[in-house]
Image (cartoon, rainbow, N blue to C red; front, side, top):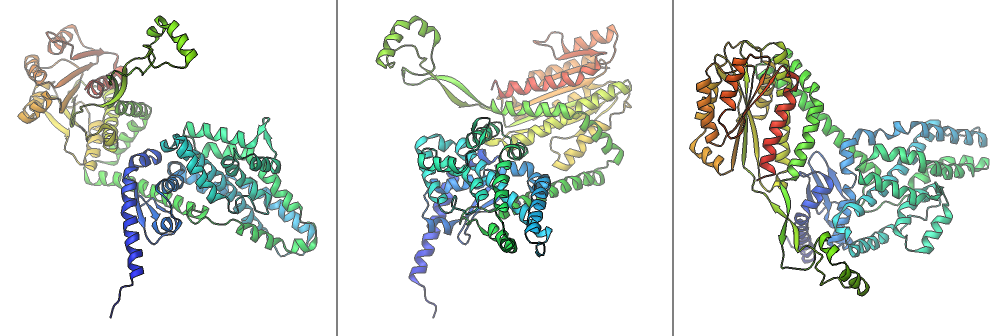
Length: 639
């Protein structure tokens, strides 16, 4: 008969309860972990069977060792420290995975130098030794990579303590440092190999900076100065600078190579030089193997090999994404009626406008930041807040008196209003339509300017929409920003729809840019605008009036409308429906066309809806971008 062991049951119940508590704990810190890792999709799952952390980038999961947490009896803040520490390098790993994995190449000169030094030394002592240069090179490579890994861990330690909000509280910081000491006392500075002790001494020096006996011991053992200050002070200050400006391995490794590695190599070669006899030369292979086994592995922390596996997975994931992107482009070509020439032409404009789009990315980020604003609000008439300079001037004698007593409480020199973050009421839906004149008067110069302008705006707005989805938690709601494109001339038709799926939308962006050819006869923009107006449902009109929906139309044309009266009439209806609409004219036009254009777009309106660029065609891109920015700023900043 099957019997249940009571002890096993209790253990299982304990694990289940701990797993549930850990899940709640992680939910509480999800936002701060997202800010720290810059990876909103990363999930945290407890595993009862694991003994250490396992990061799986392809699954977007960090597996946590529940059993080890229970065995070590860790509290929540200690667990949180380990999670932060485990993920401290993750943003830089994602950005520079290939650089991390190529360290043996970027440090090849140093590896080769030490390898040949050791090989020459051993051969001098023992010409008949059996140690091969390849073995020595593997040993030298591992020693240097282990040294760099220790530097990475020190960088991770500093980044956690300096950037995680919880450790801004000095009590919390002090507690966690005491906890780290208990985990790092074991065998961290007691190695018989001085170059190992040196690489580990940076963390120990920081942990025990208030313990004179420990710091004096370390400073006595490794009395090195850089620019007249201790090497520990120098390195920490430089790493803090890099953390502050979010630099990673590409700045850190050159710093280490120039200022820290020479001392590491000095102690290392001194140890090699200590091999004096033929007998000790014969023991060289044993010495190298012991060196590689020296470090005691922490039960929770990832090893260098673990980190390399994670980096390989990140690199493989990036390669898969690149391949998928390439396949996606091929799919667009094969399935959506495009040819290779059109894709190549699109890539030309995409590359040509890259600098413009990078500027737009910065603009989008600032715009999202303005989705939350700080406003002054009165809070219980408390006599504290921001210093009011005018009140200080008039109350200066009272201020001097209060300074002597150390009591500023009753001084009326502080604003009684406090800056408090308030959420904005943002729309659920933003629709932007682009109407492109494809009439016979659109010549090569106008087509070139229009293609470039569309490449910047359509691709940038597409990127902004993707950014909005990722940053939805900052705007406190989901916002869709969608685009459509129309060509008009004698007739009109829609090229890209708001409802297009991702790949279809991508293909339609390509078509919108590449298929402008100036073959559509006259300039009938009225019919196109009428169809757009007729497609606005009563419900959408209501949502537009209530700012839950925004609809914006931009028109690029090279002349005045063939039917100005019809265009004026439909324009009035669109404006009355609170649709924002603007037209930009490009190319040389006569006085009659200028008068007609102004009659349609500018005369008898509260503000102008038309802009004549004329022969300043090169300004088209900047002018349309400015109009797009202005309208989106009015939504995000003034809502």
